[in-house]
Length: 82
Image (cartoon, rainbow, N blue to C red; front, side, top):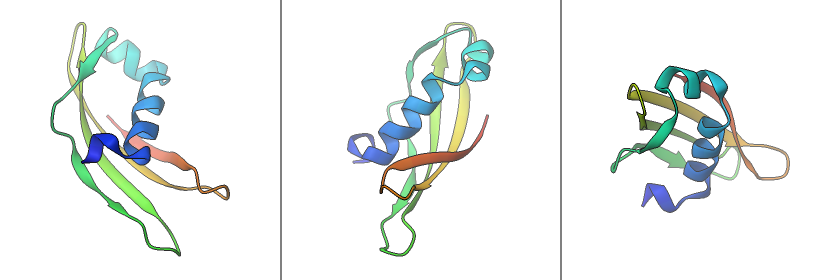
């Protein structure tokens, strides 16, 4: 399940610390029940992309997050669109 994956949790953490998203939504209330996306865990270059519905106090938005592993094998968001 996507929500139980470290990559998804890294995407959520980045969403929650991105002030532009907080401002656009008026504050984050929650997330959609069914995020979509994929996780590739090839040894050479693990990567993930998610489309996440963000429920806001004033406005709901959709965030597309692109992640990859850093040198410590930690998931890092390198691009978000919203």
